[in-house]
Length: 380
Image (spheres, rainbow, N blue to C red):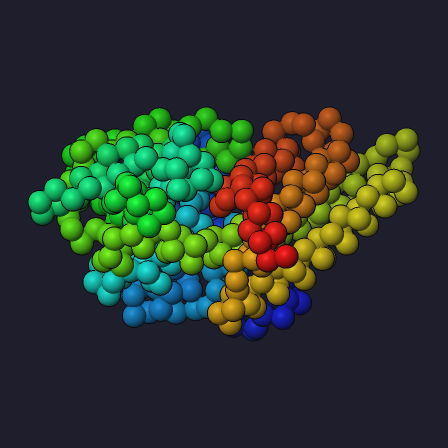
């Protein structure tokens, strides 16, 4: 793990211990239940809010814990170290940062304390059935009608969609204006006529995460629902905030790689074949040497990204590199590790099999890796 990371401090180590205890007590025991019901229990959000985990890197002025990006990274890492993919804190934190950096003062004061406490759960609705990574191709509209905006359209693959009380909806407020007509709309879902949550989608992995379809049929929203208070800023707001999302995908990915290595080393020491432990076979040792080297390189890279985020200099290009390269590595590393488990690696009761299924989407959400390469290539 990362006790030698340059951003770690004694205070952060103490915070990690507290988070680890919370995750062990409040997350791990419920994982199987959450998979079966396809969503987490709301109670865990309130408990995490009390503990200060939900908005660990947002100022106390807005109800957060007043820490840095390092504090939030520790939360993401500890969730990955136990293999949790159900608790949708990542998306929740992403929405909070849209509010923090792009919202009006009134929007920040209204929503951030509720997100910090767990009173409200947040989601972001970008993807549509006909428009995945192509955000310019969205069809959902939010058009002015007297003293309100009227929201029409649908979204799919929305994490936290079933649980969300606050959804940041990407919509066109001026459909003819292309990217300049995109706005981000703040939708409160409780007692909201015209808003409907579709089915919780059956996924390859991440079974406990409530990924949904959402439908908007003439939903009336107040005029102060536009994030930042000005129409047409949505595309720029997305571009400004996506590096945060992509960096935390990298953070979770590296922690997952480290977990896969640890589990596989333990298995290789215990498992016997042909009269000796797997770890004693040269093929096993060489493969694990490769994985350890790759994990170390990935840790060094993500540590640099974390420091850049803490110091406010992370850019779109580096975040895209972290997202694409680490998520690719996560998938290939877990595949290598699974092979050493033999037939047991294909059994879902073994964590490595669950990790294999859960990892695949890392290369898709947050912007498909092909999009990441396109962004990186523009700097050549």
